[in-house]
Image: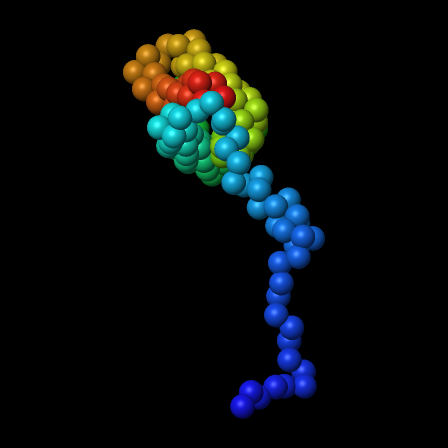
Amino acid sequence: MRITFAHRVPSYRWTEQHRLRHRRIVAPFRENPYPKASIQMFTAYVIVTVLAAAANVYAAVVDLRRADWILANMTRYGVPHSWLFPLGVLKAVGAVGLLVGIVVPAIGVAASLGLVLYFVGAIATVVRGHAYAHLGYPLPFLLLAAGSLGLGLAAT
C-alpha cells in the first residue's frame, strides 16, 4: 500500500531548459582558460602565482601598517613617507590581479607585468639610495612576479 500526501513536492526533473541553464552557469568554470598548457605547466603557473600573490599581500600589509623598519628604509632610499599608501595599494591590486589571472589569463599577464615593472623600479630606488645590502628585499618579489609572467605567457 502506497501512502500519498496531498501536498507532495513534485520531483525535480532535468528539462532541456534546466540543462541549458546549468551549462551556462557551470561550463565556464569547467573549461580550461589555458587550452595549450599542459597540466604540469598550469600547475607550476598556479603555484608561482599564488606564492607571488601571497608575498605581495604581505608586502602591501606591511606598507599600509607603516612599520618602523619600512619607514627607516624609505628615508634611507629617499622616498617620501606619503608614498607608502599608494605603493601598498599597488602591491595589493597586483596581488588581486594575479589571483584573478588564474581564471582570466589577460588580467594575470597584465598584473604580473605591472609587478615586474614595480619591482624593477624598487631595485632602481635601492641602488639609487646606495643601499646595496638591501637588494635582497625587492629581488624575491621581482623573481616571483617574473616567474608568474613567464609561466603565464608560456601557458597561454
